Length: 596
Image (spheres, rainbow, N blue to C red):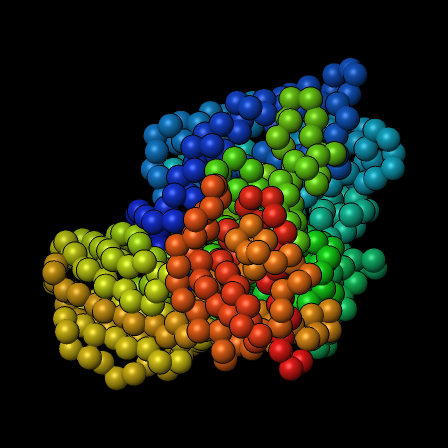
């Protein structure tokens, strides 16, 4: 291994932490747990069966990315298991992993396609390249997460079998991964190979990842590193689809492995390019499944794309330790994620538009459903990962200490290096208001423990008290680091600035404005108002005077609602974006701006 050159990131997810999310977020997580994670394999047995009968006749009619479903489900299940520690889910994951291992061919193949279509073949129709390497990438990711979480040696062995197959097929054979086509999808295997190398130290996995890196430079591939270092924004790169973000994650792992600054600079440039030019007001990413350089582009914002953006942001937080990256994750989680999930936990959207309607993915991309997998599509299995990623950024370990990034009713217990635990319980209704009381419990030695509190960049006036004693006003977009021998009964009070904020639209949203209160994007919903969407009068943001109200509707009550008035005095009800449209009514987040 290249330990002498390897670099550590600024922050890392906290291993061994326990989480209890309460309030609205806790309800959403529990419904996802009960109504999807615990039921999906049983309700969609073809998710595993497709690996077992891949060489039987008649062949299954599969979408090119069918092999991803199992890996995406497994990744989501493992990340969410960190919250529940539910033995039922643990047992199900273990059975799922055992079934995957049982379906693996002797040469390591673990996809759903027959022998003449594997890795670089065509689908049965011959119309599309299979995304077979892409499917194996997601399977590697899920297996490694379960191995790291549970110590299950079978999971690591199965993942290594895939890595060995990739190396045997392409390393030193004259065959190239670029020959598999679907470049932005199949070349994501580079990230899986890097992760395998980090886990095992087996050099051929890194050598194979480097071969894929060379394929990035072979047209029509993405050329991610060279393009980023040349200052090319992501949307102008050869492969700006969302799947390329997983190759961008490989760039970060290559930096961790080698310490080569080119990789760090390229990764940061790609992340910032997307943040500046493609992250929508909802915290979602993509327009028509790709970067366009236009955050106002009204084309579909796919759930899978937002999940990939959040995974990239988790990596950026690890690399940079910048609390403003955690702001991005909070924005995406409270808006794009909860907006994509049905409040029932039974389904996810494919598209969660800025203006439009909420449609289940089973409605918009029903073409992915097949016999034995009636509920499966890419977003259905991937959406839950966006909730599970809370375990990767809610609290993290940095060089200066523990950093608390997630705010909301919750109890998080963190293990201490010197022994014992530090528990922080948040008594708050955040993000509905900005006041938080964080109650500390300490078990173990009373040594100094630095604890960082994220101050969002939008909170321009923040107050912090420890045991009633005020601290200096912190800077927006920073961490307040508190270092003391924490004792049970200590209290931290945090007050964030929840004054409404605006985003003035341009291009497709010219003459319009989006409104925020704290991290929540606000929306007009026809269900809550007397006027139709195209009849909403212009608003003057400085005259809104938001007043929180309880709304009386027969069903689909919003998480939070505000009464406001347009520039001409018309009463307007706004709700949180995650609730907008849940009754099937149209909604808007870009509202007419008075004086535009």
